[in-house]
Every structure is written in C-alpha cells, then in structure tokens.
Length: 158
Image 1 (cartoon, rainbow, N blue to C red):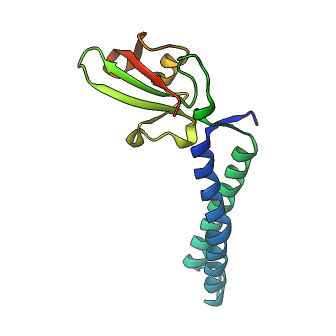
Image 2 (image 1 turned 90 degrees about the vertical axis):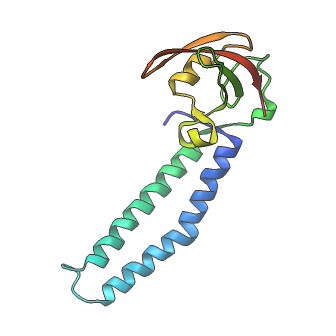
C-alpha cells in the first residue's frame, strides 16, 4: 500500500474510530452472536445472520483503519513552510469571481474530507487546481455547470 496522506487531526479521528471498534463494537458483536446462538437453530436465525454480517463489517473496518494508519503520512499544518503556496493540509480562502462569494477550504486526505466542515479531498478537482498556487493567483475549476474561476485570497497553515 502506498502512503496515505492525513492531517494530524484526521489521523487522530481514525485512531479514535479504531479504538472504539476494538474496545466496544467488537465485544458488542460477540455478545450479539452468543445471544443469537442461544436461540437455537442457526440455519434460519435472522439475528445470527445480522450479527455475523455486522462482525464482518467491524473486522473489515478495523483492518482498513489499521492499514491506513500503518501507511499514513501524517502532516501537521502548523509545521508547514511552503512559502505561501497551497499544499496538502493548508487552508485556502477563495473568492468566486463570478458571484463574489467567499469560501474557505482545507485540503485534507480522502478519509477526512467533509464539505460541510469545509474540508476537501486532495484528489478533488478544486484541490488539484489549487495545489502549488499562491495568494493572488486565479484558478479554473471544472464544475458540473462549467468552469468556475476562483481567486486565491489567502493561504494559511493552521
């Protein structure tokens, strides 16, 4: 597996989820399987089937998280020194040149992207257009409605 870029905050979120899965979810699934087995015939036991399915999901997610954290390239935005350029983990203030709307995005890893929290994946079209640019630059981003142009107002490493 190649390295998985994560911000320091994103890595902590994955560690917290992994801890929850290992300490609480795993034991809850084992208890649900034991209870379903106590009901008798497993061939037509919907509770048993559901518990086994949940167990598969939990174990798969644990393996996924362990793999990602093992291959993680953790970036603390506060330690970045990119001379004002947009890089992974930076926070960028933009102005939509057509509407005048101002938005702020942080460029993060795929697993921590959440548009509601103003975090966009490094693989998203807007992040790919911004990487390497500086304040004052204008970038074009392919959107469903056509190309949108944004001016980079500020680049921060917070």
